[in-house]
Picture 1 (tube, rainbow, N blue to C red):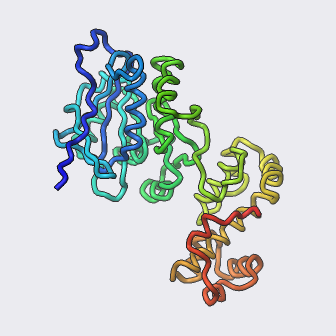
Picture 2 (picture 1 turned 90 degrees about the horizontal axis):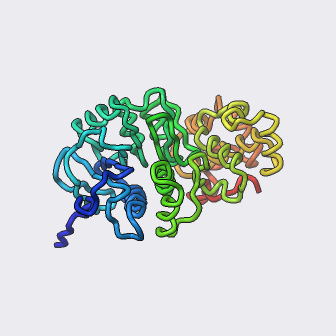
Picture 3 (picture 1 turned 90 degrees about the vertical axis):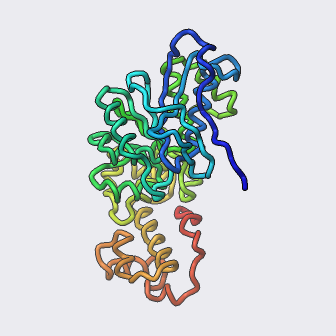
Length: 351
């Protein structure tokens, strides 16, 4: 049997430093947390804290806090030993919640949630990384705040929190003393921004250089996109495509998409015509019809259900539009050879 010892993320001995660090960060790891998001953040703190990679907590310090002493399991199976129990929230510049699997049971216990609420009352900035945004929202700590989620978990968030409007076209969002990050590589960019705020740009960039990370991306940069937008270089069009993909069942008016991009409708029309070779409404319609074709080929749902899922008001209207694009009706589609399951993601709708 493989008895794997837990990783200990605790800082080096306090005897290595006599002065309080300029940046002190507390981590709370959810059960089945995402190891990559945690490691990207903590390694940037480690490298920023000392010369070279000696790892002494001189300029920065970090603690993994937990309500219990047992190691915390990451979604990949590796365990991390907490540094200790919860400390006074006022000790920290940030308290970062690293989320993970959404459907693997309770992410944090009641004592941990109570601590986060105490930190919020004290005005300590709370950071939700990966699905840490779900943890904060479940605790009622994101009310009235903009919340960043991964495009991959956008629908999960909307189903659980229908009264929130998540941001799924940015890497991270700072809204006062709440910071949320989509996770993945975006965690590295957020960590750089936090280090830079307290320790300066040169130290923040030193951490990235040692980790062989490319240029720092601002939080406003769009999330790396699904294959549908692989050939699109314009960031505004990529963000528009993400919005369209996230609203297939409830299509957004083109004017609404334009407003979210801080463009006029006419500007977006011209931009799409230049980049995509077609108007945004036409592209959106084709996208929904391709999605409907995907559902017809890969599910046993009724044509009426699929019409509604693809954002069409009634089955007759959907059938007319489907036949105009594909040359056969939705019912006929099921008697034909099915398209590959991955084709919805792989096909480029602007060919």
